Amino acid sequence: MIKLYGMTGSGNCWKPAVLMKQLGQPFEWTEINTLKGETRTPEFLALNANGRVPLLIVNGRKLAESNAMLCYLADGTDYFPADRWQRAKILEWMFFEQYSHEPYIATVRFWVHFMQKQEEWKDKIAEAMKKGHAALGVMEQQLQKTSFLAGARYSIADIALYAYTHVAHEGGYDLNAYPAINDWMKRLEAQPKFEKMTG
Amino acid sequence: MIKLYGMTGSGNCWKPAVLMKQLGQPFEWTEINTLKGETRTPEFLALNANGRVPLLIVNGRKLAESNAMLCYLADGTDYFPADRWQRAKILEWMFFEQYSHEPYIATVRFWVHFMQKQEEWKDKIAEAMKKGHAALGVMEQQLQKTSFLAGARYSIADIALYAYTHVAHEGGYDLNAYPAINDWMKRLEAQPKFEKMTG
Image (tube, rainbow over all chains, first blue to last red; front, side, top):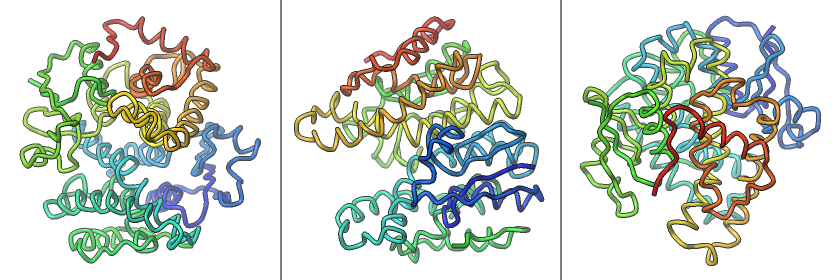
């Protein structure tokens, strides 16, 4: 049985969970509360030296990094096709997500939604939001041209970017200026066995 | 002919260049000076909406994100083997690099080495360095157990992490506390056709 350690409400943890549901891959979820320091205990650090969730355990072997999990789990399926160039374009979006999107969109949501710092950290939030909007602008441009991020077909790149885009408003982001992103989110939500994040 | 747009002295740009040299893959380098805003011109933004180098052009098709390039270029070689689990572990390190390592190690080097902000931004640098040392600690732990990051063999994960580790001292990082990292860097430098970054 595949085990997934994760926190409800974390987009990074939602990614491998939704993909396994779509693939019909059974797994066991273990709730880890990062807000209570549960990723920094000696027991957890022995599983993942980087002290983060999600963490995937497959036959006793450990895998960290949500997007590496998506690649592993989707291997051999239409969500991560074998074509070399197509794979490269999917990976391009996934690295974009972790470098140019998540640090500004997930982080602002964390500060506002979980830590309630909207007033205290106003300037810092405004600064991060500029970069978050730049990332949304890059997505919008692509989605004006293609139905999904890496082209005509739904892939793990879409799961990776949907994770924090669909809850960006919880950090105060206004997505009204991004019609192609809004249409794309509806297309994702219509995919077989797709489930939005809860919590 | 493969084209690579990059800036000399950028670790992210060095990654695909060194791999192509190791693979014997000819390519044409176009120098782009990000410090002079050359990634934000309308001409460059038409090539990469995210306004960054490196950018790889293969038969007229564009690929951004240095680590996506490594995966594409190494596909079918020993540097990115076909085994599904092995690939996942290599990708794990590459996502770790972009999320937990580069933003603290490359960024501090940029502030200090290129922008000369070591005094003015002292507090901000000290804050970022804590996270940089945490990333180096995770690498050190792994390299005490295995010769290369993803196991017994050299892979694109090692190229991705060497990029900014071997110039971390230019940002003021002291690597003396990381003997396994220092030994690993020597093993990388002994790989066939391996070239350190210049500039």
